[in-house]
Amino acid sequence: MNIFARSTILLVLFLYACSGVHSEVKKSWRNNINTLNIEDLTKKNYSLMDAGSRLQARLEESIKKTGFQLTFDEAKFHLKYKIVEYDEGSAIGRIASMGVSSSAQAKLKVKVALFDEEEMVGGWEVNSWLSGGLSEEKLFTKAAEEIASHLKGDF
Image 1 (cartoon, rainbow, N blue to C red):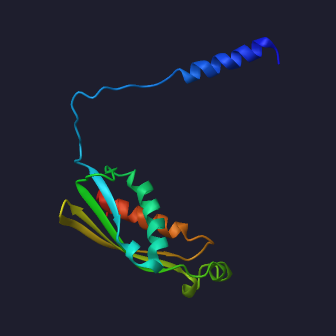
Image 2 (cartoon, rainbow, N blue to C red):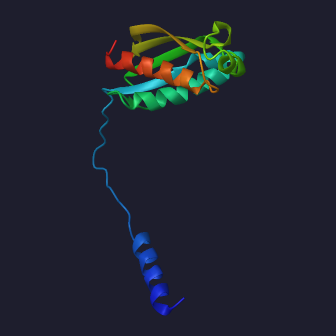
Image 3 (cartoon, rainbow, N blue to C red):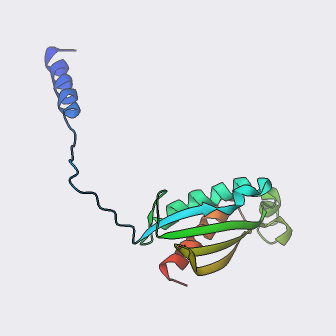
């Protein structure tokens, strides 16, 4: 490699490394008007714990599309959910029956409540099902999108 190429690479790396940001806080301010904390009540049930964490991951993605800001600190609103029923069904049965067999369906039933500090302001029961396909991820995605639409007021 010639000297020009080496010096260009070193210059680019040096300039890239010379960046940063600094802030000095004079007075702290928190806007918690639209903050939301998600609480999974399913984690107490060992058999549904995995389904609860899968739904929480999809909820975090879906809530980004609402006006709420997710936080793990103090929040004005608390979204609590509990998976009441989860049946992953049979992926092979869904494919073999081309989505016709109801015994092969994947099913998810979730109870959700939205609290404004300590007062409940909304409650929903969300039922999601999947008739075709191999993966149950769409089941959780659809349930999370339904919950997010309730949070936006699109019901």
